[in-house]
Figure 1 (cartoon, rainbow, N blue to C red):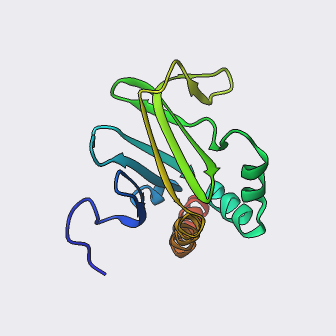
Figure 2 (cartoon, one colour; figure 1 turned 135 degrees about the vertical axis):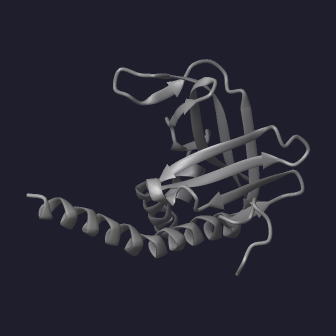
Figure 3 (cartoon, rainbow, N blue to C red; figure 1 turned 45 degrees about the vertical axis):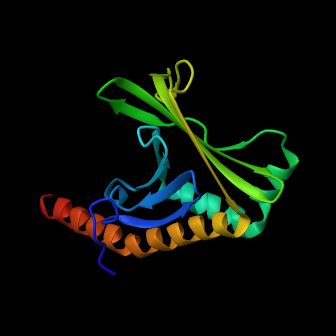
Length: 177
């Protein structure tokens, strides 16, 4: 399917409410990450981009399939961190990005936040003060499952391309020896 506008060109899937949306994009696949963009419709400047490693996608979907993730969420009075520390450099300095999931009644809430960050002694990026942007998207359990399982399918479809590139690079290195 050919997407019509630039915002949808690399969009894999999304879940939207009447106030917020979380969209998944493939444009970060070459760096082995999946981009989740959280946006408030009323205030589009309140947007948070979260980047999860391919390995994190597989861990989360495995926990969805086994039921472990939902058990952990139900057993905890607080949201579960899917990405506790993450981020990177930005034009305004270092940015911290965090992603959590929680449940209330029969709704799953994906909660994103970003704000100033600092690089720890181990190299991870941790929050340095309060978040400047927060967006939460509520959805049914089935929509949550579809969001992550469809994303995993997209990653799986991309992996042969990545492996081909890795093999070609290794063969090129070997030919120089």
